[in-house]
Length: 484
Ligand code: N01
Image (cartoon, rainbow, N blue to C red; front, side, top):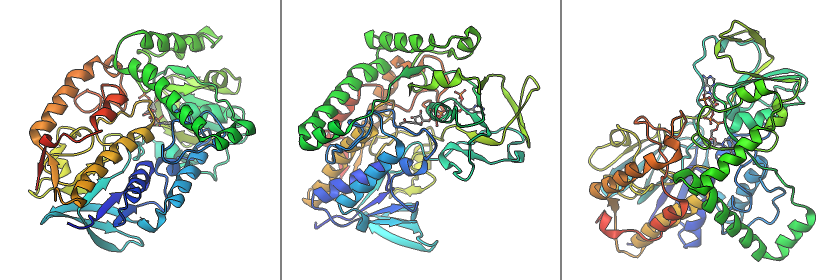
């Protein structure tokens, strides 16, 4: 059948991963469309102070691109972005990436994907491919809070993923709204730099203490000289996170109790009983995504940091007014209010051969076949699709497993075994029924609001271990597919 042509949407971590796997398989006919001006996805968009990955660096890297040069146990965002750029260069991906080009739609007609692209430079172009692979990320679209008067704020006001580096926080009054992973990292980084820091907390969060050890020159030299050390490091953190944290999320047991004890002991470090009470979450540890931080409780106990727990009523030019009538004056307003995690591939429109769109298929919420494919959409594959195991695990490891699976189908095409493949509706329903039965056993349904939860109140997450996900994707279940 000849060499298949592949279009990848997005040059973030998972799009790059797919590109490298294609190259390594000897496939050359592919294009990665990236709407931004550079690669790196979330690690390009997020540049806020204190940005650090909360998955250990040794495990947050591609198995095919070990990096002995990590400077810390948990990498700063800029280091990860530089690493992804190096991966793109080392594997010759740049010649395949079109920057400033947004895929706006794709339609499957006469056995191929017809792809509409806006840009670069705004011009509309078209492409055609045998396979369409979306690598559009999960936490991509900033969610702005609906707070009355927000537009009237006199100073700089921006979302955490659109950091305004011209707004110097030094010596100024900085208000941060939100206490998710992002708000916690920003607060920890800016405490002591800002003249006064005001943290607006709607719901307190549990914090796992995670000292961020520096890797000295000797450690880096040893890892450079002995690649096996790096592989060992990868396996160790993979084992540790899988055996403890990932288990704790999906099953009751000693792992859950251990993490519960660690976060409660951490909270006990807060000396002032009133502050401790206000920082005590109303829900179970890990119900919301567990936050990892070493310095947050030290930061909020500083004299120049205030945790405001009275609900926000409105914003006025001088600052934030809370329900108790207090005006909290601020010079800079940071919205660490999270992302629309349910958009997935959209707003891009994807239309199958029978005219059904992704919007139609997901009218009741995003669903997928085994996190990667969709019935009625032949040769359409997703990286980080619905129900991927994204809670506190290395997304790089997940992307590798999914990309290897997708590559398997592309290879089948190259070998002339299939022209198109889409999972059957029955197999997809079977998979989703099993998911829905397992989801209530997870900690995410123990009674809290979080970005994990879909419209039906169930989390859009993987209810088993990440290992089970990798196992499931090792070989395609051919009987689950309709092929031509
Ligand atoms: O966003 P979030 P995030 N008024 O949705 C509050 C990943 N990540 O950007 O809890 C007042 O978790 C909201 O309050 P509540 C990671 O997967 C990874 O922090 O809804 N407050 C909450 O406190 C993470 O889970 C790293 O009551 C409002 C906060 O805003 C995901 O990104 C680092 C509000 C939003 O928290 C998202 O984290 C950083 C309102 N109107 C992030 N609206 C790594 O290290 C919302 N809030 C890899």
